Amino acid sequence: MLTRAYQHSLNGSHLPSGRPLLEVDHISLFFGGVTALKDVAFTVTEGHVHAVIGPNGAGKSSLLNCISGLYHPQEGQIRLHTADAPHEDGTHGKVHTHALTSLPPHRIARLGVARSFQNIELFSHLTVLDNLMLGRHIHMRHSVLTSMLWFGPARRQEIAHRQLVEEVIDLLQLQAFRNKPVGSLAYGIQKRVELGRALCLQPALLLLDEPMAGMNAEEKEDMARYVLDVHELAGVSVVLIEHDMNVVMDISDRVSVLDFGKLIADGTPDEVKADPAVIEAYLGAEEEDDEVKEALRRQTRHVEEEHRG
Ligand SMILES: Nc1ncnc2c1ncn2[C@@H]1O[C@H](COP(=O)(O)OP(=O)(O)OP(=O)(O)O)[C@@H](O)[C@H]1O
Ligand SMILES: [Mg+2]
Image (cartoon, rainbow, N blue to C red; front, side, top):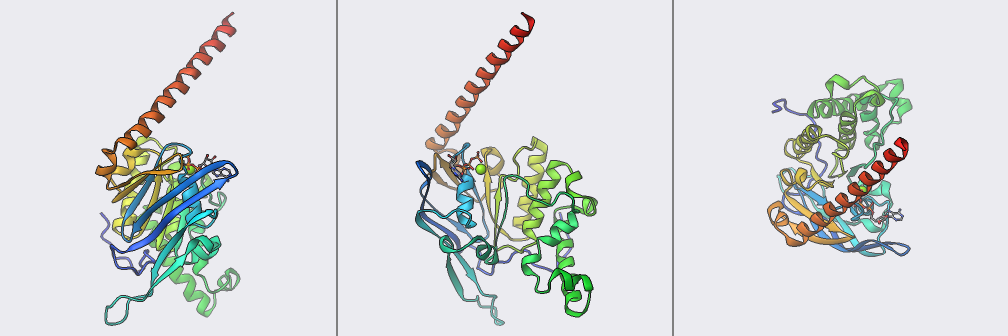
């Protein structure tokens, strides 16, 4: 357990815990004849880890792309609620509602929505520290050039940014790798750096697209713990996309399940686990996997026989 007191809040949201943070309001997204999302609606609550799960091609990444503004759904709305900083007497700041569906990605990022991608998108030749510092650029008032000159306000700014980045390094236990080029690190560590970069934005909402993809069981468990730390120690609200139902059940407050672009279940982990539609979607996917595996086995046997013959 971490005992150090952090100087910087990593949670960029001033909304009171338990309030609606993000409302996905009946969105549909089409690519030509393909329906990626159909009438999907659910609410993410401030302070929650909200998992979105579903089989391959269910529309999970498309949903995240709609929230972060890379895709624009043809139907429905997505609203983000933000609040001003609390008043001096402790009362909550004014709440603002933003229609994300009409904003470009950089404006949505400025509202505090940070994300990681399904494939690692880091600067592999730069060190962990530099990648995390770059994650701060959105908050930097002084340009990188004046920062390099290291004078006056730019210097103070640089020091404050550096402190925050060091706290992220501490939270995610990246100390041993801070000066290593990201490209030289194990895959699991790179994914953790990506989580760190998103966290350096002091997000109001953190979107994680399969942060555990391609990991072995131990790495997955590690990553799940870091996501939990981000939530419990840093207080950041998270939308977590995952393929593997078991991984998310332990760490999520709420789970939405997509299948073929439709929301087939939405509830607590226990409710969702017991839902017949969910069980069917996952069993169906497993049967399909088995069929593919069997076909591959047959093919391999065939090739081996040809070689022998
Ligand atoms: N840019 C695009 N152009 C055309 N079709 C797309 C595009 N993005 C997604 N799709 C389609 O939308 C559907 C949902 O895809 P999406 O990537 O959102 O699924 P996913 O749940 O993230 O799957 P995975 O588990 O494989 O990551 C798929 O049929 C996909 O082919
Ligand atoms: Mg995806």
